[in-house]
Length: 120
Image (tube, rainbow, N blue to C red; front, side, top):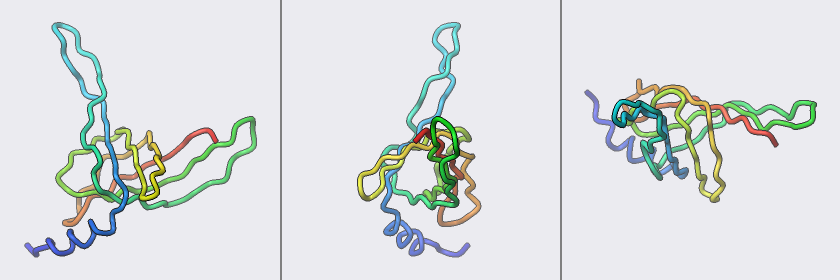
């Protein structure tokens, strides 16, 4: 296998966003099983790439909606439906509530498709 160590280091220099990823996990207490949010990673370097943006639709409330992709290191098991909170290099915090399972087919990183959909 080719050594991608230098490429991984170079990519991480470009990843200026910090992400916190939480997912629900089944927790059994006695005889009762419930779902609780669990933090998978906190302040992990990553990069958000915007794929498409749409203007607000007519109606009482406009929406701030767009598709994005998250680039993050391999070795993390990120389930579909995880909540991803991104803090960019300017300190702006954005929450993505719908996400895909991480695609880790690359040697240097994995990609997660995300959708931000909030009322403006």
